Image (cartoon, rainbow over all chains, first blue to last red; front, side, top):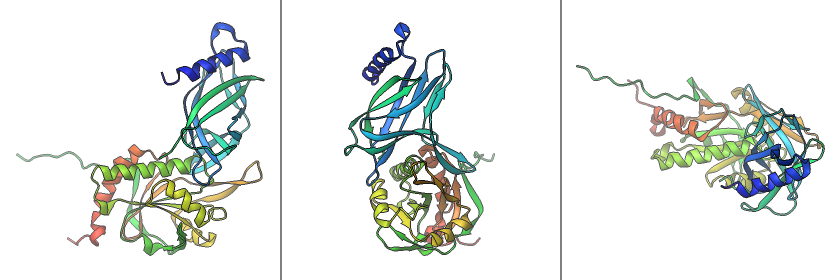
Length: 145
Length: 195
């Protein structure tokens, strides 16, 4: 129930942009959690799961948000108990697969809020994929504590 | 007929050192600018995490887990004397001043301690403990810091006692910490009596 409205919006926009007709949106998002920046910090992180429902690979080429100057896909990797974080230029989901964005793995880095952002504030994430289709996800910023 | 008991519960996620390791001497500053040394760790349990405030993912998530676990331990009756301090030691002293640390750690609770200081002093602590950290250039001209993600359990004698490897879930911490703290409870009131 919680995602009914955002998901309907996402589906509608995805259909409009990708022109996939009545087959449903090729790309959807679930479990979206975005945190408000911590005190003194001008960045934060967001987590979600992306689902590719189509029969073709989907490549996320760009992520943006009207509320942040930049959004980047990052990946934390733990090797021998050492954490390394790197930016990903793009992310490809094979046909019928999902990609989880979780703490300690892939995540969205929300950089430089345009305005002050407190927990509860609504933010929009826009995922551009396959040369122009857009998945729009709305969520509210949460606090970690 | 003898009563039988099951095997004693043991930590499942933490590695407890067979012999605790005495921490090296070091001098850092806490978020209030006060000197913090090995002596400062004596008298209570501590959970050390090495991270930095420009870290968007693992560091806040780990501090969140540690703070929530500590809160739950208190709520489920863990004796106050064995509740651990939570300490973030910055591996990015260049950007993490005491003022930066102060606003950052206070977000996670009033009892959280943030430490920073000279790189050489930091290395006095990290090298013997096998804690790794190194700058990694970022695309925007800035940098990230690759770093060890372990949480170190320090006993009230200021000894490296146990280690949690990531991921640091609240459930894992809540399972193991009471077992570790109980085993070494004698340290709180002094060394256990010899048998």
